[in-house]
Structures are given as structure tokens and as C-alpha cells.
Image 1 (tube, rainbow, N blue to C red):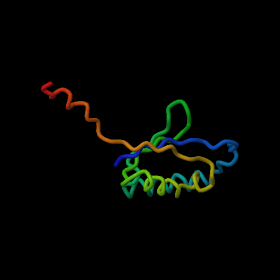
Image 2 (cartoon, rainbow, N blue to C red):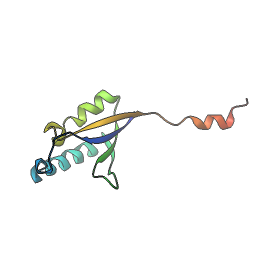
Image 3 (cartoon, rainbow, N blue to C red):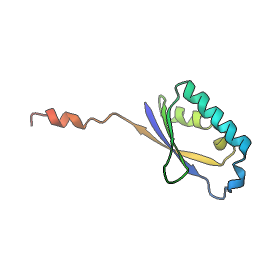
Image 4 (cartoon, rainbow, N blue to C red):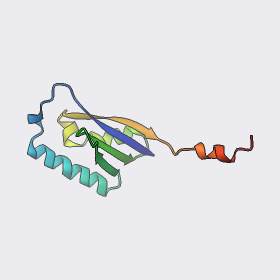
Length: 98
């Protein structure tokens, strides 16, 4: 199942908490999750510097478990909202005989 994960900053977190060491560790962990096929795509929002990830997991709980291993999440600097996705089925209306 595809899961859309949208980064949310936590209240009260200041920019100085995003140290170069944590950001490097974050990039490494994202790369490892991408190499393992868990993270399929990763982006930043064009106007806001928030991550948007597409994961391939069995369910939202599994996706959340993987995201919780990210250093920025572990250090309580960010969290993710998860949206489980299913394939679009609207094309069937084109072929409905009613």
C-alpha cells in the first residue's frame, strides 16, 4: 500500500535544533529507507521546506514505525501526517452501462 507522509513541524522547535549532524544523519536514514524500497519517492514542498514522502508499506502503522526511526522524528523536531492511498477507481464510470 502506498502511504503519503507529510512533514509537520512541532510547536516550539527552533531552527538551531536542526544541527548539521542531525540533518546528515537524517539524509543517511532516508537514503537507507529508499534503498530498501520503503521510501519510494521523496520531495520538498516548493514554497515551504517540508518533506513529502511516498512510502510502500503494508499499512499506516508500519509506515509510522519506519518514520519513527528518522533522526528528526527521534529527536522530536518533526512528525508526519500519514494518508493511506488506494488506486483511483473512477475510470470504471466510463464503462458503466447505466
